[in-house]
Every structure is written in C-alpha cells, then in structure tokens.
Length: 59
Image (cartoon, one colour):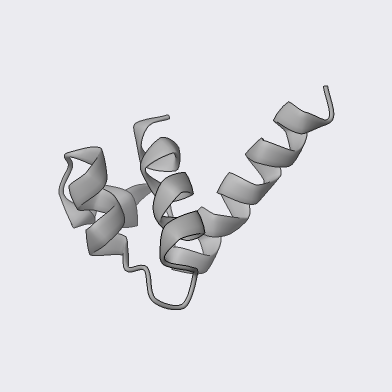
C-alpha cells in the first residue's frame, strides 16, 4: 500500500508525535483527504503500519 510505505520512513526519521498526515500524504504523492478516507487519523494509520510490519517479520 502506497500510504503505508510513505508512513514507515518518516516514522523512523521524525517520530510519531512530529509527523503529520499531510507529510505522509505528500510523500505518497496523494491528497491528505485520501489518507483520511482510509484511516480515521494518524493513530489508526500507525497502528495499521505496526500490525502489517509485525506480520511481515513474524512470517
């Protein structure tokens, strides 16, 4: 997923508190509204990213 990939690097570089959905959307090359359509907020997106990443590492 393009949004998830765009969220991973800034999370490592900037951190959860400082990263914004608009920064993630910009990195993904999409509008912020599209991120908001798929996720209810930054916490929801980050939870999804962490779950998906943990599934990758556990397989």
